[in-house]
Image (cartoon, rainbow, N blue to C red):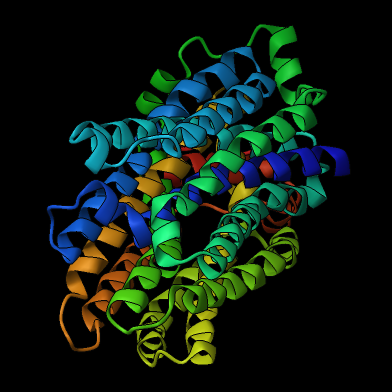
Length: 442
């Protein structure tokens, strides 16, 4: 399990590194380089628009790679998604600026960002199923939290490199070529991830499906026809996690550097500390999910997020590094209370024959609803000289919607289910079908 979890974590970290390094570049340099005729605000909005394209591609990627995972195995997904995302990220670092090739520059940027999103859309489903379908029942949450730590590790790698370059290069050097270096490094990371994953074994549950001939012929069709309500509920439930994460890691970086005069190195350091603490908390919270259930933690995380958004904005507004870090970490702690357990929660909501498609599409639908527009909306709402309280209202509203969605989802932790039903998991599975339109939880 440790070897499998390590392969899952490393690959997920590399793919999220690819995805996050673009978000940081969008906040710092892409606007002036690729949209030079725009005003500073409009340029930032346009750069965040290309950032959002990756989220729109993620559900499509999860459908394509989910089909592969449910029809041909989880292992091919792990290799193909990593290769696609790595190649697209290296190519972003090679795109000439608007000054060199005109409108072709932002067009290429959008295309490559779309390919990044396709690859990442497939990564999550393959990575969490690698661990959850190998893990013993009582530790499924813990082992499934390893790929959930991948985003934190990837973010720290991406922003650590950006911070180093930002601190050691002049503004001119950073804008001319320094921002491209992290994209080129993605190629070496992708090769490392492929090497680590080359010997990963197929999961026992997929092997059983293949041996008995019970694989789904059209997984996406089966999910959309039979479990569309579950798909919408999971997408809505996870929206707040994405919204909060990208408000912290992308919007706050642009806001602090452009509106508050905080140097980009200082703000990157604050965000990195908060994300590192979030990553460290992930396995601890996942163990609580194994003990007390997935749903209670998700409800608690949504509630905490709703209550913390105004303090988050207020602390960010101080421009004090210590207080900003406190605000950022408080927001991420509410988010990770949910996301530490979803690596086990979402796969448990779907039967094995459609699990790769259902879990991945639901997860990435949340990214579209919560992550794609948040930097754009928050940037527009924060335009002006006063505190951006409208951003706090926006994030609180998303948290309340997600709270309502989680309230309509069933518990899936097998041990908690048995306690509630006096040892009959079948009774709870039938109740869950009626409550959320799920395939029988496993």
